[in-house]
Length: 308
Ligand code: NAP
Image (cartoon, rainbow, N blue to C red; front, top):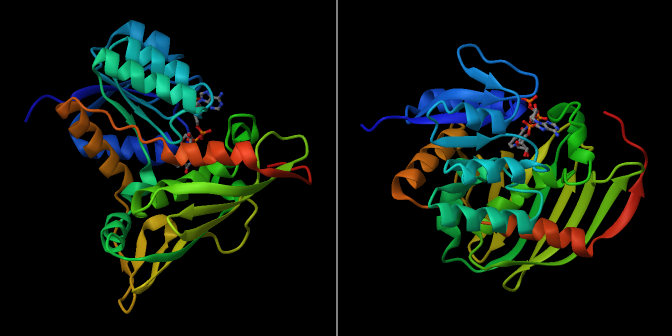
């Protein structure tokens, strides 16, 4: 097998520790040699305060993975692409559509790989759901994505700042799944969102969309205590398809529920290696377009002040 890609990682926060570090260690095609972190250290791995210092130090790296919040990620990605490095972006790929368009253009110019990841598309039930839906008439789609911000994002003040996406940070995962599995493109028709007083990004959102003739509704709630929901239900001419637990559990009409161990980030790193080897990029902005459209047309409601 060819040599492993020497990798740098930027932003050692929750997702980097929970998912990226174990997935990189298990992959074998990537060798983590340096991190850029304002605060954290990692045993046996060189540390720099910023991506610019990491790049300047060399380390012989060929690829960078960015695990920072979306606001500010453009400048980090741009620095890596300018240096001729392959880049993997956490979702959402950038804070704006013009940023990600410019990064895709730059990656093509530099002839390096840009991979805008959507981890939920790697969930166990998603590929089978897409295959099953290909020949079905779709009557209606209902998305219910309700989680407790205090439980899953403790202290992440950035998520409610401008450019933090608010409840669209988890909600865009649902949109990444439906844009992948529905045969017809999605259009946003109406939206409403609730923004807590003194904050910039929403804690609640409702979207009315359409895919072909089928209405597609989405309810996003960041204040859900008790049972958490990451569910998509699709009414078809052959019965109800249900994807639950973020796409990891699939139930087809008349069949038992199928589920498999979580391999989302293993799938992302395998794909990153494949894209680099083929000299390709993968930048699908459709989930981000729908979120941007929601911010364009939504009716706003002010909610009570929120503290973590
Ligand atoms: P997090 O725990 O807040 O970590 C983000 C890290 O980025 C921080 O620890 C910090 O690392 C670095 N950073 C650089 N500039 C920052 C800034 N201005 N504000 C805050 N942190 C900054 O966030 P996360 O949950 O890992 O999320 C990071 C990205 O991964 C987001 O785009 C999110 O949507 C995505 N993601 C998160 C999850 C999840 O379950 N949490 C799941 C999938 C994807 P240093 O201190 O090392 O500099």
